[in-house]
Image (cartoon, rainbow, N blue to C red; front, side, top):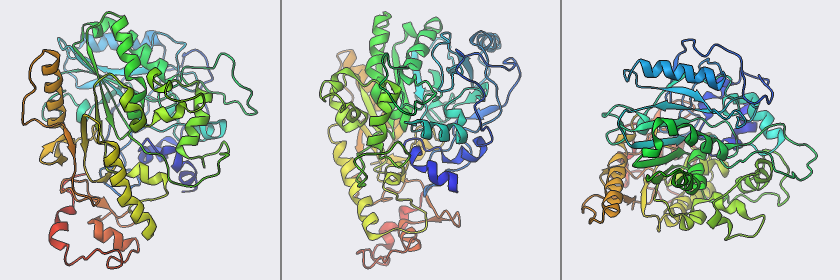
Length: 509
């Protein structure tokens, strides 16, 4: 618990709590920066890792993100990975698994110098592509990066990545689980740069720092190289390319979608590039912290990004950067400040009571206690997030306490105003196609869906809340009582609200 306490704040955008214990075994650095070569027999048959199923995160909702397990795998050279991919192609399309391929450009690497890469599941004949960015917050100093490397090495190194992954939710290749995107080419890009997908490698003239981190940060470059490596696979002939991501990966979509669109245009592709941001639309912290943030994990997200941008040589979209003076570029990491500057179509998925946003304020639903002030903050958060989404054209925002959704196997079950998320995405897709072909979009197919009810968990399809001590599912009122609040003092009448609150227990999560 002591280790989790230290790194908890760093996991703001990732929802990656469940896999910490399994990954902690891979302690010290397995490789130094070596241009990408690693040992290991890439041709070896290795276990399949499910993208979302694993141990449940230590949060108040069973709908919280579940981590990628650290099933034992090996790295390898780009050439060896390509041989493995050729074998997979020879086997045809009989597998639903995505297979690992390392980047051809070995100079673009993970934090520790191991080869960056991607997982690919091709669907022959499809001109639709989905590129998914994994989440996992960031590190912004030698201390925070060392801690991250020790406890969650898979987010900084490819040395233990498995050879295959199986997609779930919107990454699934089955029509039952993924009705509208199962027949697309699916690309999963693992997060190993710790820079919210903004890094471009060492700065040409780095400012003097007393404790320079011994890592490289190339998140934005990794995306660029993945697209280059997909050219032989047919991405230049794509009709639609959707850049998607959860949590820090969702923020990465905001930061990179214009750059991806520009790159594909320069390659001669005629694809429409779209963005899908899941749980990466954050608000600034309300916590009062020291204005001179030390380079520790006590920093607010804003301060961590300010410091990190210098370390990562991070980039933000040009049109947003022009709105802010030098040193204020960190503001472009917040969707409500960046959105109006984007030209590519964007769909935002955001729980109105995001658990990671609450953790920034040291609020843990399902934990030991909750103050009246914290309860008030939770209610205000819903209002603020809802207001920040007013001008977003395509949005799905349920009044629930959770974090991330699109890679969950049960993502079909969540609804806003009677419309599921896959249905809303399909309506958005149809509208974009109609506009592109100068047709009138169909009526009765909504894709701006924000819950009108105000209280957390007022949506009957919300993921269930779970008491972390007993692992029992609770209604919101039951959880508030368990966390020490006086319902009558808060103006909540458990008897009078019984009928309307009976639906608060989720039917999935």
